[in-house]
Amino acid sequence: MRKVAKIILFRDYSFLFAVKLAPQEPAKHRKMELLGGGVENGETSLEGLVRELTEEEQSSLVASKVAKLNLIPIEIEVEGDPHFIYHMPITGKDLQGVRIRSGENEGYRLIPRSTIMDTNRLDYKLFTPRTVKIFEKLRSLRSSRSTPCELGRPIH
Figure 1 (cartoon, rainbow, N blue to C red):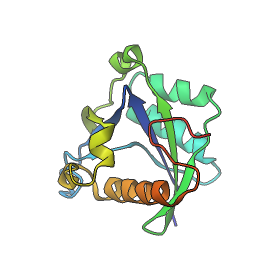
Figure 2 (cartoon, rainbow, N blue to C red; figure 1 turned 135 degrees about the horizontal axis):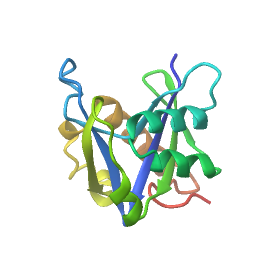
Figure 3 (cartoon, rainbow, N blue to C red; figure 1 turned 45 degrees about the vertical axis):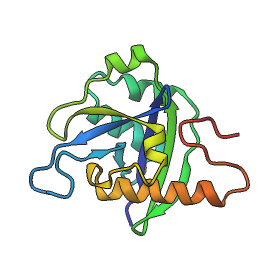
């Protein structure tokens, strides 16, 4: 069992994804995924997320913002692993400052929220398999909760 912390960064109803660089893993290579990753022993999910963001994002702009906020994750299970999914708005100025560190990722893309939420419009081949499973799980939560789980919107 491996704990995973990911973040949905959104701006004007679009989500920010990293484009994975993994030539040795064709199912992931040049596919989009949420920023974040594995949580190490002794870390909280938020600490793990901040560490992963610092490793992935050259300017550490997102990591420093996340570290200052009291974000509460949505907890789901994907492939038997607990996932802690955070979400946070990002401004246009922040977005201009985001620089993905080369090596693990080759850049980022903004995808409209409406595309992500509409299973008929979403091309699953553009995303890593785990990212697809995360969104499927979040969609099922959204449809089964009495309080709506709105991605890219504050949860009350």
